[in-house]
Length: 349
View 1: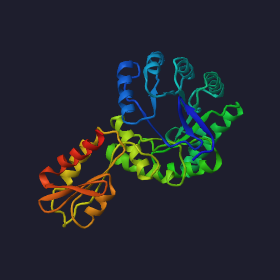
View 2 (view 1 turned 90 degrees about the horizontal axis):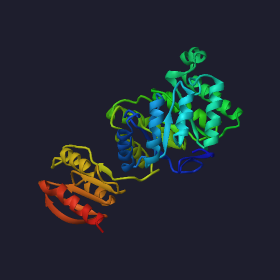
View 3 (view 1 turned 135 degrees about the vertical axis):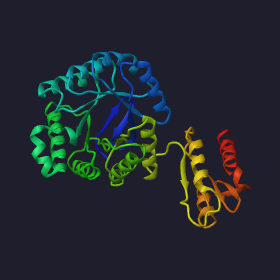
View 4 (view 1 turned 90 degrees about the vertical axis):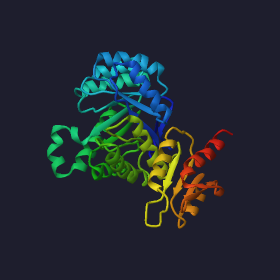
């Protein structure tokens, strides 16, 4: 994790703070009500920082209401037009995401930096492998990781030359190995917070896997301070996946965590259907609890006892566990209802 810390709104990033989870709205920012509705939904699922696209002046104007009513710090995502970044800050944006290479030249970068300095707002230097400067294209063919790293470092030096240090850095690629390689290299050379993600990761299924591999590999080596899982899906799924990655590494707790056994020839209940139903019913809970769904007597009772709540099935029936102790034996058809009855009893205390 980075030595330098910044704050986006009231959320600390880097400097030893917990790894934060971000997402980005997919609404039309000009529709303030729709954007706020999505932000509130993201906040309910634990999102801590939200980014919104600002493609034009109408979207920048809508930010005034969005930032005033948002429960989360709002980062304005700006491309090509530096004036939009300044308007977004005037509208109350908590931070900016820019690619200094496509904002209109160094003089435009300086204008944005001065506006951010005056507003006390941090900047994210966002560099993607798909949008490297033309002079890096040949290098990218030969050594894509080096091209991504050196482009990012060029922009870091640009902001440092302006005596601006309130920033974090992201270097992303749709290639998992390139993303890992670039961020490992950057972590050795800079102390600024690193924002992790695999860009254009894909759908919920493939994108979650690619993001877990890329982000997880870096976090497991102590690299990374904030994450966004980029999915072609409802942004809530990005938040859920992000927390699942952090939970899997023991870095954060948020919401329920489900463990379930794989199916095999010993299974005597419909474990696949039961696990799917439990996962669905857990979806609206926010409490940090671990729930186990086990399908046989080999590993089932032991694993279920390690969870806060669990069920272990046998032939036509199963046992409900609470904090390691069996509390009920019920027919298999009633296992899920019995499990949630115990969960609800606990949560209502």
